[in-house]
Amino acid sequence: QQEKPAALPEDRFLTIAHRGASAYLPEHTLPAYALAVEMGADYIELDLRMTKDGRLAVIHDNDLERIGGTRGQVSDKTMDELRNLSPGPAFNEENPELAQTSYEQLSIPELRDVLIRFGTAVNYYIELKAPPEGGGMEEAVIGELERYGITEKSGQHDLPPVILQSFSEKSLVRLHKMRPEIPLIQLYSFKENADLSTEDLKYLQSYASGIGIPAASAHAGFIEKVEGWELDVHVFTVNEEQDILRLIRMGADGVFTDRPDVAGRISSSE
Ligand code: G3P
Ligand code: CA
View 1 (spheres, helix red, strand yellow):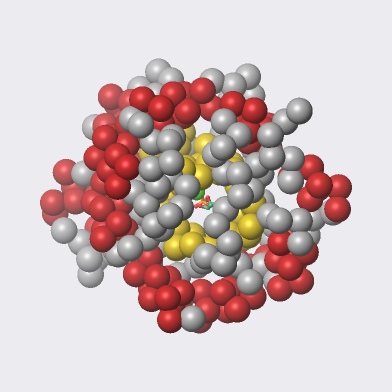
View 2: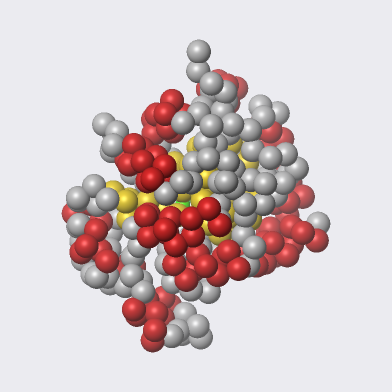
């Protein structure tokens, strides 16, 4: 008999700091996460990819061009090689009004760097990107969370300390078997008008606590339908005040945002 997925808190709109407070500082860096915490985010969001030497790098793209300004793939590099790359120059170039030369000293972190830096002082919303079919990544993530004492009920703001997310259903089912007490979010990449069949929703309910969908696909009828199955709906990636407000009124349970200060302000005034 498989355990039911963990329930997420009711009537709580979550501000999930997408790659940290990434509108203001280079994404997936320790300062971007620190700023998100300072801004009162409920969760900091991390994308994880496995390196060639089986370590967990905190980075969104497998291709290193955008963030590291170099050719190559995360999956072909060791963690030590990635540490020598900085997301600073790319951020400075894209955001001249926010640019600081000191950002060039920032590096791509490993999951454990973030866990050591923030410990139980923050809640983590972690995505497994491209988990290998045969497993290994799920065990590595759970192992790190345990090693740094993040799996017990140590969450901030009366929330679960960790939520795990993935586009990979297989990976989430594996995680649910390993640690049923950790809430899991199944991600979808609907282009427009999100929809799921009754069969999909029934199966989701067996391993997930909710779903994550793109903002352009969100609509009230869908959110109501999904919530009827006791599944939460988190929406990515939403940065404008009017869009955040629209989603709150539509019944969404949280947003991934590069601007956690804005989302926090809007949700607390609603
Ligand atoms: O994880 C939810 C959202 O972050 C998915 O979009 O591409 O930024 O990982 P992406
Ligand atoms: Ca993500």
